[in-house]
Amino acid sequence: MGRIWFFIREAARALRRNAAPSVAAIVTTVVTVVLLGVLIPIFQVAQSKSAEVRNQLELKAFLYDDATQGEINALQTKIEALPHVKSVHFVSKRAALQILSGRLKDPNVLKELNSNPLPASFNIKPDDAAQLEAIRNELTPPDASGTPRPISPIIETVKDSREEAQKIEQVTSSLKIVLTILTALLVAASLMLVGNTIRLSIYARRREVEVMRLVGATRWFIRWPFMIEGMVVGFVGGVAAILILWLGKVTIVDPLSDSPLFSALNTMSFPLLVGILFCSAIVVSAIGSGITLRRFLRV
Amino acid sequence: MARLRRNRSGAGEPAPVRRGPAPIIELDDVTKVYPGGHLALERVSLAVGRGDFLFLVGPTGCGKSTLIKLLIRELDPTEGEVRIAGRSIGTLSEKKIPLLRRNIGTVFQDFKLLPNRTVYDNVAYALQVIGASRAQIREKVPQTLRLVGLSTKVHSYPDQLSGGEQQRVSVARAFVNHPPLLLADEPSGNIDPVTSIGIMQLLYRINRTGTTVLVVTHDREMVDKMRRRVVELYEGRIVRDEAGGGYEESTNEFGMRMRAEMGVGPEGATNGEVDELI
Image (cartoon, rainbow over all chains, first blue to last red; front, side, top):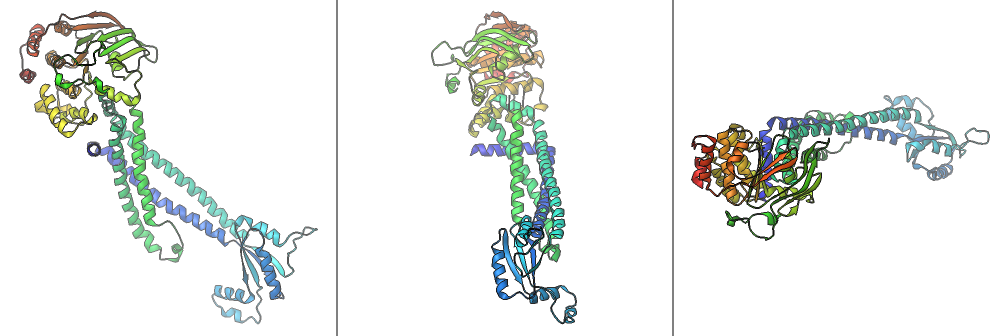
């Protein structure tokens, strides 16, 4: 017990006596944690957006108007049995009209129509966007001459949202790559930055460490105060950074989240994010101190 | 290493127990070649008995400091064996090295004080390292600082002290846990002759409590006056090993004789306190 207090007192002494490097280490930690705190949610938004797009991809099999209910039911079971089909949803002519009128600014336009021109359809969702083509082939396998033939006579044509989807997919996936690289670089840079700052402050005291060794201090006896010092730096830096992030959340993100543009974004909860950042700030600083010290302990 | 510790109650008596001839320091055919090929020590054999006072002399670069570094295992010998209290230290694991060092007080030429600690904390650190209680620290540190004559500088920082005073702190730190062996590497190297007599007197006094003292120096005049055993190194080899015709004298007598012989007045400012304590 007395030991622990001794170590804590030693760490406090070191922090006081080396104010400038300590402040530098704290500021570095703040900057790093804030950057990560901003980037991680952005990264997550990009992830979830691209997942959303993937989920929207589907095939539409349009049916002839003269299909009977029996034929429709039979086809539905048939499609459901195909590989990679996640769900099949039947949209009747009536439902199709309703969807259309919902999208129009002036639904009265449709009243001008005497009959319903829209076909009934099956909306088919794949279990994976990459399987769209495979399902399409199952629905309209090519015959001997190579032209696609629907598996059922009631299918008029099969369409998909592939082209638009592909574009969106391309954009989000390149965005994802860019963000991944950015985040990785930032994490690496911040680790090195924190490590370097710690290293500098220890380097300034390497003579002290050498003397401690020569007087007969064990490695851990020397190391603990440095680790505690690192933890304090990580703690203070973490608290400051989280305050900044919280301010940003309250003043910028929260007011925006009422608008429909942002409401759909799902990122991890703020407390969880804060917790992760906080713990990593402390652990990185402490371990950074411990590892850096190793070089100077070889006396 | 516990058995290496001297029984404190027996201060002044020859180092106790564990009969057997094992001298406190033994070098057996020790050779040290530095990376790069510099031959620092060549087949050096040396034995120092418990309670001895030994000078190690020789010109700069003769291997004196290397020898000290071998004794605290700051360096490993290229060949040969170093034994402390009968135990070969070459086989000590990394973890045991601190334990060895705690039993050897070392006074360095450049003092090696911790710059951001007061005199008191510098000396206390040597006790904190061995896990001494606060009560022990509060008792022993002032006691040792009184011994070296620094009672009034307890709260000063090293850079506020003169060279001689810093060297005294260094001695106090080396001696505070009463190690059975004390090594001093050029203790008078950076300080003036008057002050160095004070340091020698201090080391003499420590020796009289039963601690083996090994002093490395190139101060021949001082060595001759001290009349103790002298080992001379030249280019890595022992070229002289002379038992000093030293006779028993009190620390006080010692100090007065030294000052007289070195032609220094009977000044007392630095040593007054030390003398009182004998």
